[in-house]
Length: 203
Image (cartoon, one colour):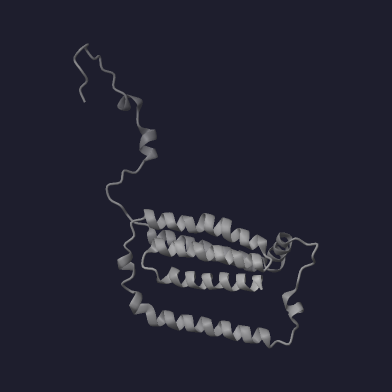
């Protein structure tokens, strides 16, 4: 009874915080709702017996990724009003994509339940003597190695895209030129002056 109540509580908070993440007007508020969603997703992983994934959600996503997003949003001078101008124009296309994804998810769920395979065979439980982290590592680095590498490439492309989108040319910035510094002669950099006493320094 307590496990079912905790599951529905965590799941409801995850869904609500996810909706608030994408609907909040303030980007800082969106990141904070995202952190709440990560925490409750970690709670769901603990209930499912995947303690390692729950730890990753808290340490990696909340402790690094979400906080990094928060600092980037707060420190960068991004004109969010300009970014939202094309929202209504692309809204029908976005709804179409969302509908396709929901339909695919429902079809996959129906195919999974109508496959005729027993739940114990589908779940493929690991032996009790094998730790959760060891079982996960064996699957990732043996059976799902190429998918794992492809996910890394997708994250790399997303990182490069974020850098390209936020990169701006700023005027009035003095850039360092190591070549000119190396080629500079000592007599051009240092000037010896016999300064008389009490005359002061001329700039």
